[in-house]
Image (tube, rainbow, N blue to C red; front, top):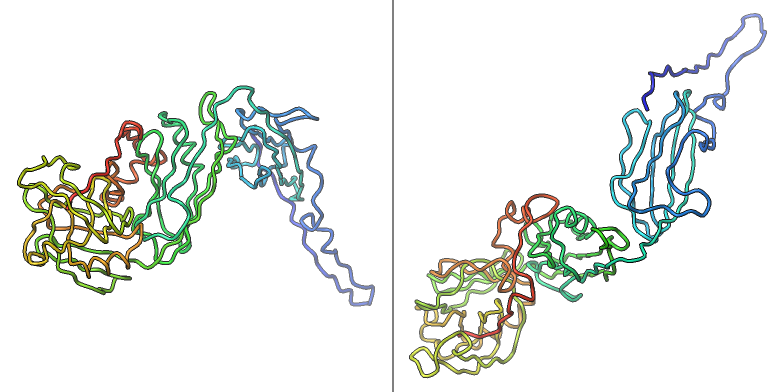
Length: 419
């Protein structure tokens, strides 16, 4: 619908003083059209929603159209019973508003429409309707991770889907509904690891002592043919201090920083030739006071020169394939001078106990100047931070590509140990 330009009437009030005392004439502020109470705009708009008890098909967009040549729609707000907003577009001339985000199935909506007539007087109309529920549908549930608790500033948020989502348009709907907020605020993005798993991380690490909340607005939303958004339990995490341990494999030294200030330097040994420690940023996965480490778990034949079977204490795991920071009393003489381990970062028992007691899950362990490969982003723990921000954002369906990594059931989570 198009409208011809309207000429607005400007009402001015002038006080006329008559010299002979005939009196004062004035117009009241109540005479101005903008001072009037909003009128019922029911006759000024049409709505493609329900009439009576009829329910609305959630697959169809909402549309509100102005019926008058000299009137227009000024604002539309549509929300469901849980407070979720429907995104929409209003034509520049106010002739039409339509929704651009999907409606939820089986939901109750309230739509508040604001209008004005040719003289600028405001109109209001509140509309209510319910959406239908499909008779047959598959539900997509979301499980956020890790478990609620306190973590280091490197801990990504994960979202595991109950069914695979491969289509880019469907991924866009899912990703747009998964929300992560932090206080203090931090710019971040989702990255599709595979068709059932997403990771969320900030551009930089999380702020220290932050509160992070993840929730889903996907319930009842159509994602694809016969696939609708389902249940998701919200998640709250907090972070502690910004603790980062930096190991220089060439200098055989680890420096631990708390809130960017060095608090301890520790002599270490890392992987020897053939067993080089991985470079890059790793995230603490778990802490184990005691681990029995055997060379057979990492492919070393029993009885060979490199074979081992050792009790290990104060073990802080950084990869699922068995890389730890741990006590290595057998190599104290080489710590600070040579790399003699099978890939782990070894230190004295006293230093390992200190490290074990000061780090938590989600803290950062970074290795540099090793001859080893760089930590993989996703298949061996949390190597998310080894992707630069531009590459990370390309893994978002809202931004760039749609990477297809191995599905969780196709990727064995090995838990061997190396020393």
